[in-house]
Structures are given as C-alpha cells and as structure tokens.
Length: 100
View 1 (spheres, rainbow, N blue to C red):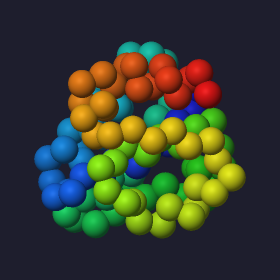
View 2: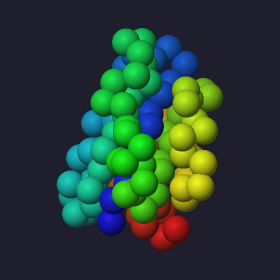
View 3: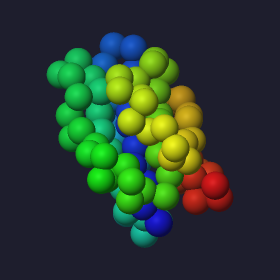
C-alpha cells in the first residue's frame, strides 16, 4: 500500500513536523510506503508531485487548518484526521487508511 500525506497545524511549527515524523515511523512499522508533505512555517516542504498523488492508494490529510493546493487531490481517496489523532495513534490512523 502507498499513502501520501499532508500535515499542517495552525502555527506550522512543532506539531506539523511531529505528525510527519510519527506517520513515517508508523508506516515503516506497518510496511506501508509513505510520503509526507509538510505545510508549516517554512512553507511547503517535500511537496507531493502529481505523479506521487496518482500512484497513491490513499491521500491522508492530517491538519487542523485548510491545506494549500487541496484541489490537486480531487479524484483521490482522501482520509482526513486531526493532528492530535496522528500524535496519539499514528498506527491506528494508517490502519484506517488501509481499510478504505
């Protein structure tokens, strides 16, 4: 399974990057391919390409704010969660993506 994710929080500092790290670790643990784009105080980092998105089984949006360039995910399976959900149960979040 391949998941692409976007993480973003209101201040765009710690939680954005903590969530990206937790998702990456949990994906490795579960044997899931994961690419994570962060939308933080430094702007968009590790931006997902149209090809990355097209090859993904699921788009995971872990955010407490509206993300930038959301239209590029139109037509994809999208699972939206809060940053808190990712920080408290990243394995559970990925497992729910696998069920889609």
